[in-house]
Image (cartoon, rainbow, N blue to C red):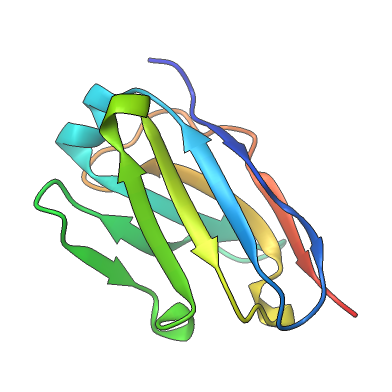
Length: 114
């Protein structure tokens, strides 16, 4: 299975927005759900947002109301719209399945700083 390819990260000021994109096998996501994860050095990777095959979504408490996950199975792409960013959102962001995972991609760095 091909690794996911994440993009869209960058440096943004607090209060700013970014939209992350991830391309992976649409078939894999349809079976396992789509998830965005993040990791900072020295900490475990955490699930930030998930989109299941029944269109149900779940979010980490700290990002609720600020982040929105969406997906396009036809394009095998999952997105993460991130608004009102805060420094604590700084991390490397990855996408992968939720119920099952494949090899991790390179991720995309998000840095929130003034």
